[in-house]
View (cartoon, rainbow, N blue to C red):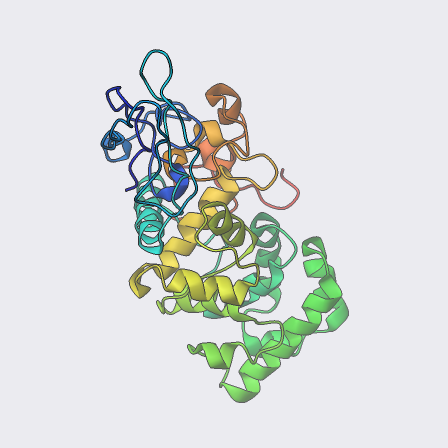
Length: 344
């Protein structure tokens, strides 16, 4: 934890809030108790005051002897008290960032103990197809579309033999239906011809399938095979940059950086928690900062609505009392199931 700056000469040192970007809890926005709901005990810490600077000789300048950062020289006033000399805030160290990132993950685990993949599926093949369809649309729209798709084509062999025009009509609600149909026909044929009709459990095999990249492969591996993976979608990338875990924009680089922060055993659930938070609270255009349970740990607090009452009105899905994205959510999901297609 970083300490506060130098205290005023001749006065008792006064604590100041720690900088949230440096792994602390106060931030530039004031008391940690302001945003959202009351903080858990673990999120309440006091800033540590630094030692007072020695008083300069009256009439002479005071210079810092412990830092290369230039500081303004001050002279004693008529009252015999010098003005305060404060150092520029220190940048957050990598270790401090890692500690803050891991604490965010722990806090999110308490907020979303039910985090899960938000695509309906019953086997690896259904998850693979649903994930391909989820590009450029919502998981809700995919979940509303796949029941009819899997009723018509329950296996890779069935889907590989589909009439393209008929499949296009079924998946039309997900958008880009012609390109997605081509991908589904191609990956189904590959599964039939190269993998005996089974979805492979290795990343290097999955990414060779038409329409399947690292994001889709990690979703399938983590949730159908129990192989840890980090899923970098738009929500995940946006939040890790807001939290200053990385400045990278490329999903592969983001995945590599985050993989170095957390143990492998956390990768899959971390992905779910971050995506859940991005969809429900930390929105792209107007994040609900005032209702965010990890606001004291966020260096970007204040980018969105900070008033608690107004922020609560921005919450989505179960956090706002609305249906989720799955028609068949897990048993421990606290929200309402999504409506079927045409029943919204």
